[in-house]
Image (cartoon, rainbow, N blue to C red; front, side, top):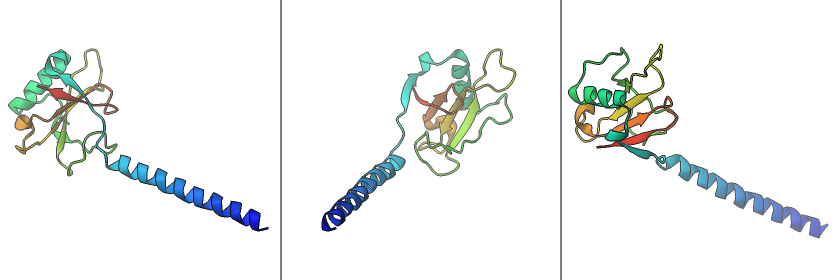
Length: 134
């Protein structure tokens, strides 16, 4: 009976240690910024370069939703206060709707998307992002 108690105690202790380690790692991962690649302006599609130029000029934008708040619900971009990010459509040739391509602009230190220098490109509707390197 005491041997069974000993093994039960060891199993419970091991389970507690593993649960704590996994839970701690998951908590750390939730706080860590996502891994984001980079893309140079020269490597962007021509339509993305056009959208970036419009952002820097302050418009006018061809799509009604351009400049609206990007929520970052999936936390694929660095965490910032609500309203920090704005999204802009990158025209997709032969697409009947807005397509999947966007530039998401942060307000940066200037508080303005046009001058912040904080720009991210996605071509898969917010699944992955690459920081635009100027």
